[in-house]
Image (tube, rainbow, N blue to C red):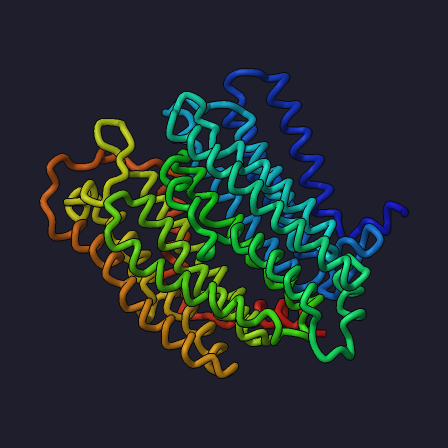
Length: 479
């Protein structure tokens, strides 16, 4: 193995070195270095994006074919890095006000990001597990980063226990897959299954267990039970991070882990994806209606949106994967913007999380209210906002794959889900505030809202670049 042979993994190697260097910088500078380390972490993410964009589009393996850099991985990694960078920027004011001002925070976010990048480039069951665990261990730490909070500690413990269970299920599935195919590499598994009429019972059970472990990571029903409690208990900027980058990474991994090795026997696993997609859309639509805490509401919203993303995977086609990637990009913008608004919700310098606390926002913060209304309309899938197009692409992929019932469930669930998004808009503009929110909005949060708001509101003006990039990325999984 030469240094040149590691070229496909240069972005990951660079980010790993940057994370270690920033950890040492924090140690030597001591207290008060958090803001410097955080901004340098954002810069490291930006440099990593540039390194990824300079890589050739064609598939290039590394580490004895355990790792692959291709168009699909490039697209997903850019989204992950953008989500991580936004998450660090959003957290700056919060961690200072809530006694979480420690330089380890942005470094742990970078380590989680490295794990996510490894996940989407995994070309082997062993590499898949290594990336998944690096991400998961970092996320467990972030969930409990507010050490003096009982809620955060409880959220971290729940996440850790259920995450360990899901990892065990995934490993059991991987061992069965290895036992019945004699290979762990995705290409080798595909070669072993080539020409077979269908998967053996043992292999199907292995795929089911692996899919269950991955469904936990994307928080799909019925493996969603951790999401509302963890979203509510974790510090709000951590929740914002959980809602975006790890979801994108796990969804991309889900696509690669099923389509690359098992694309030839899609009939044996398609029913699993159809079931969890339909259940996720329905539960996400109905369970959020009764929520009064906006973080729990966003948790159920994320479950529903995972169901829509899985529509594209259920189709099992290139068009479906393209729809998934477009959906993830739009989901990133909508959620980052919505959580920037949530992080700005303060009364007398304390955070508030109740939906009712948004009352009167249209009068006290008209700009933020307009942007938040735009994000809510977009999450509901109302045209011509970006969220409508995200749903359009995955639903059309499902219809073209003759998954008519699943497409109808998705459209009906979207109608039901519109209720709780529109309720937030109604509270902002028509309810009287018992105590108005504090007036100033932090500069970095305002910038995040503005950038994501412009993308969400004006996506329909020029959608071609995103659609074309997602199409190129999707082709990588269907050589």
